[in-house]
Amino acid sequence: MFQPVSLFIGMRYAKLAKGNGFISFISFFSIAGITLGMIALICVTSVMNGFENRLKQSMLQIVPHLTLSLNSDNQHTVIEALSSNANVNAISKFKSSEGLVVSNSKLLAAQIYGVDKEQQNPLKNMLNPSIVEALSNTKYAVAITRRLATQLDVAVGDKVRLMLPSVSTFTPVGRMPSQRLFTVAVLIDNPAFHSQVILTSTNDLLRLNRVKPKDFNEVAVYLNDPFQLETLLTELPQLQPLKVGDWKDSQGSLFSAVAMEKRIMSLLLGLIILVAVFNILSALTMMVSEKQSEIAILQTLGLSPSGVLQVFMVQGLYNGLVGSVLGVVLGLSVAININEILALIGIQIIAGMQLPVDVSWLQVTVIFSLSIIMSYLATFYPATRAAKLAPAQVLRYE
Image 1 (cartoon, rainbow, N blue to C red):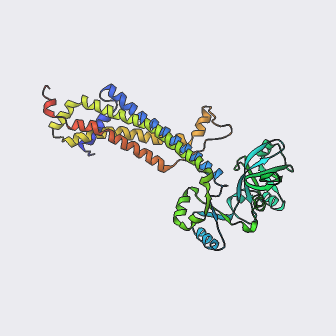
Image 2: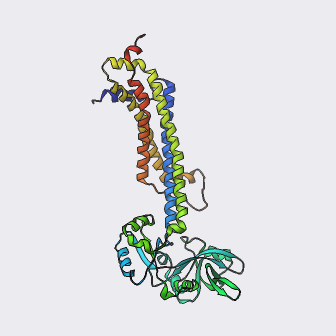
Image 3: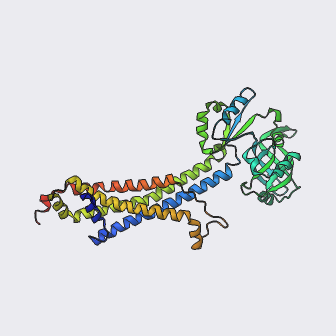
């Protein structure tokens, strides 16, 4: 089979069993370094993606992605525009408040959500219909998580006091936060709700906020992908003046921290690949020094300087390509089976839980491409040095 001369010679030089033992040793570790770096990078990014998606599913499933304040003049037009957008999942009236819950033994912060059986939203869909009925048919009733009930030392039928520090009323003793006694009607066992969640009927929550139900005009918008919120606001600029808040106000800092951590981890692990690429550069530089006479002979036989350049670029790319391919194959294998591997060697990260894994093929492609590009750039200096060798000067004393 016909091969270009530069490719043939470059592949011959790339054989690790040939030539100087020290150069072969460095070449081997450059390939191993790229492989290990890519395995670590693929595994870490996949696990971080899994954690991010789990947070998105557990935390952003309850929180309204966008809250708007409508009036009778624009309500129909805005809702019609939102309903026609492909990224909008649900639109409903919704109320939530940050407050305090007080029992006979403890006071804790809590996030209070209103539930209305007449409205359809992801929060209501996560609940058993009997819970929604119990909250709607019982005045001043709440549903709390079983963990919160344990912390407050209360059971079904006990009383708890809900307080809203942001809403106050005048009393004979001065301004006091809005508060009222509620009865614990249901204990929630759904793991999707974090421990500090309290559910009550929307009308009861409005009364606690000193808002008349007929005057309540806030609408919650739920998206198929909460991270496409900015795109929605760009496509529908008429929403900007009506915006009350979005999920970034309460949860944005957490997701920003996760994204920053993912970028920092990727940068640190990418340095492993960069060090391995420098090994390619040093191995090629030593190869050029060792093969000077051979390069000069090839030039006298007609191999052009560009041909010499290609010889050493082929050798460097070979090492980078082998390390990158091995890294992708092994990295994907480890990432997909990471929980089984950890169980096999007896490591348990969190009791009763497995690491969430979400392999992004786009990220894997970017990692592979960057590894090949860095390997390619590392060949320039030694290959250029080899191409500039003067055959007459090298062979003067041969």
